[in-house]
Length: 271
Image 1: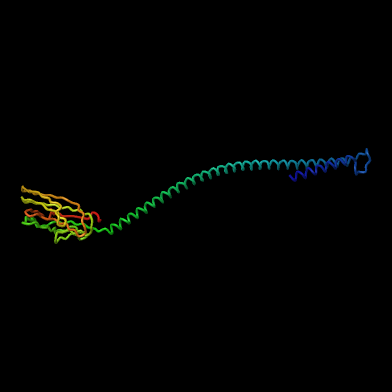
Image 2 (image 1 turned 30 degrees about the vertical axis):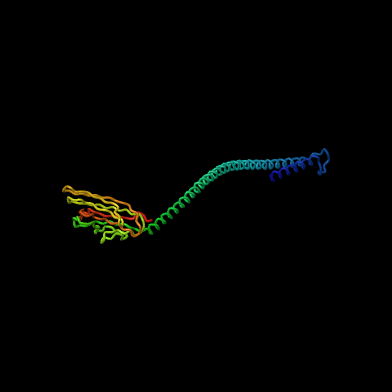
C-alpha cells in the first residue's frame, strides 16, 4: 500500500510539472514561440513515465491479486480451522460427558465397595467372634461299643454296662472303666443308645441321669433270629452330672466285632 501511495504522489508531481511547461513558466520564451526539440523530449519523457506507471500499476495489481488469493486461502484455512475447532469442542464436550458419567459410575462403585467392605468387616468380626466363642467353647463328644465277647447277661440284678470299645472320646468326659459319662460343663447334651440280642430272651437297656431313669427300651426275641431296639434323648446337664446305661436284671444283650451296641453322646451347646 505504501508503494501505491508513492506512485500516486509521483504521478501528481509529473502532472503539475507538465502543466507548468505548457504555460511556459521558467523557459524564458515568448508567447507564440514553439520549441520542437523540447516538445519531443517532453513527449518521450511522458511516454517513459506512462510505461513505468503502467508497469507499477501492473505489479500492484498482481500483488493485489496475490494478496487476495492468500486472503481467500487464509479464509478457507480459517473456516477449516473453525470447523475443526467446533468438532474438537464437540469432542471435548462428549469426553466431558463421558468422564462425568464415568466419574458417577466410579463414585457409585466406590460407595458399593465401601458398603461391601463394611459388610465384609462386619462379617469378619462375626467370624472372629464365633471363632473366639468356639475356642472358648468346650468340645465334648464320645462314642463307644460294648464288647467283642458276645452275650452279656442276664444277671440277677441291674448292672451298669461298661462300653469298653472307645471310638471317640473328645474332652475325655466318658470313662470306659466305669461306663459313666460326666458332664464337664453346664449345657445341653445329646445321647443315643441301643440294644441287640440273638438269643430267645428279653433284650433292652435303660438310660440314667444321675440316679434317675430317663428312658427304657426293650424287645423280645421269640424266634431264632435277633431282636434290636434303639432310642435317643436330649438332656440338660449341670457340670458334674453323670449319664450311663443300665442292663436290667433278667435282660440280656449281644455284641461282637460288628459293634452292634453303641452308646454315644455330645455337647450341643453350653449354657
